[in-house]
Length: 317
Image 1 (spheres, rainbow, N blue to C red):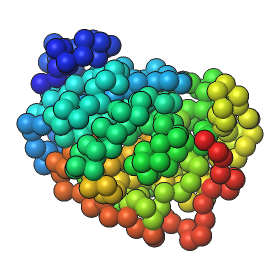
Image 2: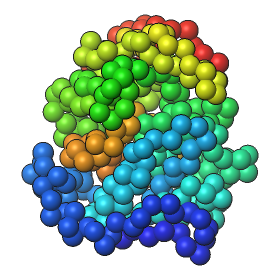
Image 3: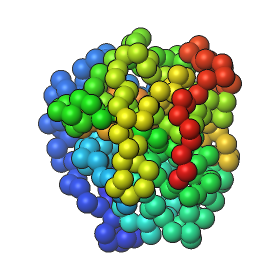
Image 4: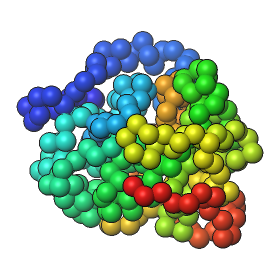
């Protein structure tokens, strides 16, 4: 079910096709572990729609991008939806975007669209199109007010230790807790959900403008020292990552479209974890409105701490 966008933009694909490998991949326990089905647990997913995966980077580039693209292609093939992949911003035209139920910004960084392309994407969302953001999608388009509201919160910092961690500096185990046990992107998860990844802190707390789905226990991992990218390659080491109330995944229905975001997805190994794959799948289906999902914002939640938020001063973009 996966295809590249040949005939539309000749440079849109930069990773190998996985469809030919799917029979062998689906036969391995790796893709079916931690669940009672072999299809990564789609919650009543409907087929016959298309998703565009966009992973252009104008800053740091994550090693996990190619694995992430392959994972979404596998999920599309298993659940009957089409997946196109591009790093060409020319894909953001009104005519091209109209064919997609959702656009997945997969670990994008920096300024990736020009003004015309931004206008096309904003109109797409305001016309009911879906947005899904993974990991450094929140480290993207700092000067675009519409995108700031769409993604929900901008990246602030992440841990820098342990330096020798498998998967890169700052990757460590942490405990995530469910705030929305009825939501298909998290309903399957154990409590707590302990995983290893690079855990983001955000410049603002999105609670109240989004429905928080996952919250991280700040006592379960070492937040500090953190590294904060202030401008270009300048980093300050030692600024706190403490948020107190620390959302990690959320969704909302503003602008007529639907948005879903997860801060997870830095680690390449995470894309082989069945719980994360189901989280990603049902996040995509949420953005595409192919599963029933309550994304009404809440001011409070089971893990919310009133009148708390980042313990650091907000930074200028």
